[in-house]
Image 1 (spheres, rainbow, N blue to C red):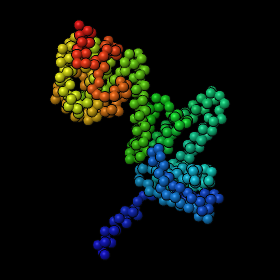
Image 2 (image 1 turned 30 degrees about the vertical axis):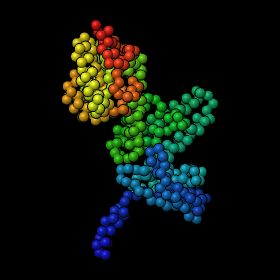
Image 3 (image 1 turned 180 degrees about the vertical axis):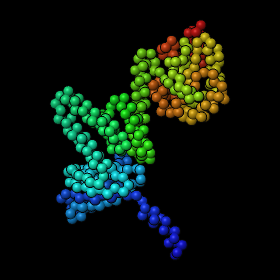
Image 4 (image 1 turned 90 degrees about the horizontal axis):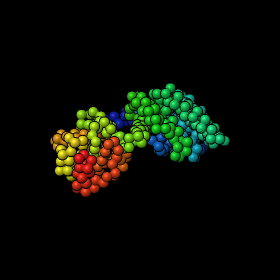
Length: 363
């Protein structure tokens, strides 16, 4: 028995030391009501518990909150959100709420700030619904957008900025809808990662930031392509030096997508591409090879082992690379021929098609 008690002691001590935040909530005129406690998990709610208020409408609850990982916690009465909280380990908050969604909170400055942001969002939505003209809609939207930007810049270390980044005008229209908003996302993310490196909410913001940065990059490439006649790429080579497709000084450029982990692609390099490069390079031909293997070290080893003499690049994003979207690459290998700064319409299908076309262009 002594041994069993001794083994149980660390577990009991660990449970007793688990960080928690305490909620003391009174719901006006709701004795015996069911109150659901939910935690925000990225873009969904996770139900933690269902509680019953006492005869005075009071309910108490403790929620686990790890140090350095504040949690967004919400109280629901039926389908109505009656309190929104951002809790840190050790917080003790008191909430006065009603069943219609109005509440006050004490003991958590972050929760008070979160409530203020949510109230501003509700006022924004009501104002948009009441607007009578397009000009009025635009003014209301711009005012709210600017208010969100000011709040984010004024509160760089607060997780209360995260919900602002995901606000929606409607199901399909985010408040932050400009491509250049990616710059603000990145600025906020870099600061929050230093304060809350393990937060699930910061991880969600990072995922959205990367998506928006890719969209911004693609839009930039599309805009530039309208001038150049083809989308530009700017990717790192095996030495980590970025090489822009537009910087390649050649009359004819073969933009080639491949996968260095595929043996047939490696054979294609030596059996098909290398003879073309050797024959036509001095006459104005170059290859810009984009590898879609996310393992950059393995790719670099293949390039060195095969002694590939052309431009080899890889951004490490695999099939998530913006280059795949820009050139609508569905399978690899895939090749595109650029001639005199424009995307050629010549077909490269067939074993001798590229050779014939280079002969015509570079003769």
